[in-house]
Length: 420
Image (cartoon, rainbow, N blue to C red; front, top):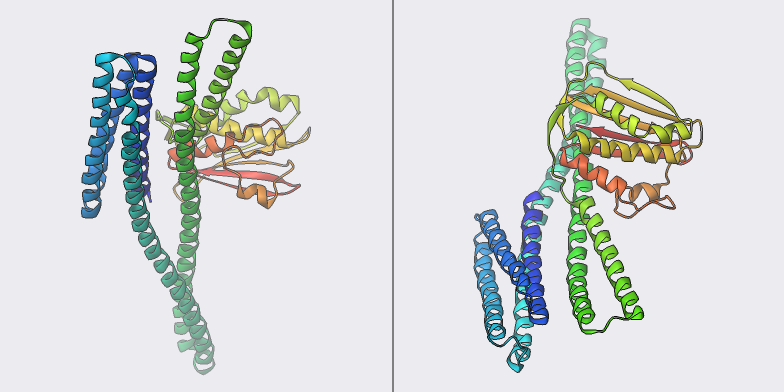
C-alpha cells in the first residue's frame, strides 16, 4: 500500500511541478518579470528529481519502466515547447501571433502527459488490488482453520468423557491432551483477534492516505487558478489608475485569495506526513506538561482530573512538541464536551511491549455517524471548530508509528486510546 501510494504521490507531484512551471512561464509572458523564470527553472529541477525517484521505485516493473520512458519523452517535448516560446518572447518582449497560435500545442502536450500519468496510476492501483486480494484469501484460510480447530476440540472433549468412564488412567491422559488443544485454540483465537485489529488499522490507514491524496488533488486544482487570478490582479492593478473603489476591490480580492490559500494549506498540513524531531521522553511528563497548557480551560469548568500513571513506564523516542499538540487537541475536545464539574481520566500503562495512553471524559459522547467521520478533515460537532484538530492528531500519531482509536457512547462520554 505504501509503495503504491508513494508512486501515485510522485506522479501527482510531476503534474504539479509541470503545472507550476507553466504558470510561472505564462506569468512571465504577462508581466515580463524575469523572477518568474527562476520559479520555472525550479519546477524543471523538481520534475527531474521526482522522475528519478519514480525510476528507482519501479525498477522491478518492466512495464512501468517503459511507461516512464514515454513519460520522459512527453515531458521533454513540453519543456522544449516552452523554451521555444520563451526564446521568441525574450527577443521581442511582445506577445506575437506565433505565441498565441502555439498555445493549443501546449495544452495538447499537457493533456498527453496527464493522460499517460493517469494510465500509470491505474496500473499501480491494479497491482495494489492484486496484493489486497491475496491478503483476503489468507484471512479466509485462517478463519477456516479456526473453525476446524473448534470442531477438533469439541470432538476431543467428547472422546475424553467416554474414556473417563472406562478407566481413570486413560481419562487423565485424554484430559491432558484436551488441555493442550484448548491452549492451542486460545492461541489461535488471540492470533485471529490480532489479525482483525491489524485489518481495522489498515483500513483506517487506507482512509487516511486516500484523504491525503484527495487533499493534494484539491490543493493542486485550487492553487493553480488562484495563482493566475493573483497574477491577473497584479497586472490590472498596475494598469488601472488609483481610485478608492478599485483599491477596495483589489484589497477584497487579495484578502480572499490569501484566505483560500490558507484553507488549502491547513488541509494539506492535516494530512501531510509530519516532520519529527525525536528525543527520549516519558509520556508521564509529556501529559503533565499538556495538562498545564490546558489548565485555564480545566479550571474554568472546574473539571476533576484523575491521573492513573504507571510510574515505571519507560522513555520512548517521540517529538515532544508534536505529542503535546496531539494530546492537547484530545484534552481540549474532552473539556469542551463536558459540563461543569465533569471528570477527565488519564491512564498510562505498559502491556504487550506497547505503551498505551487512555484519555476518557464523561461528556456528551458521540453518535455512530459522528464516530465514523471522527478523523475526517473539516468534520466537527462544535459551532466554532474548524474540524482539523483530530485530523492533525491522527497525523502526528501515525507519524510516530503509533495507533489511535476512539470509543464513545452517546450521553455517557468518549475515550481515546493511543498506543506506541
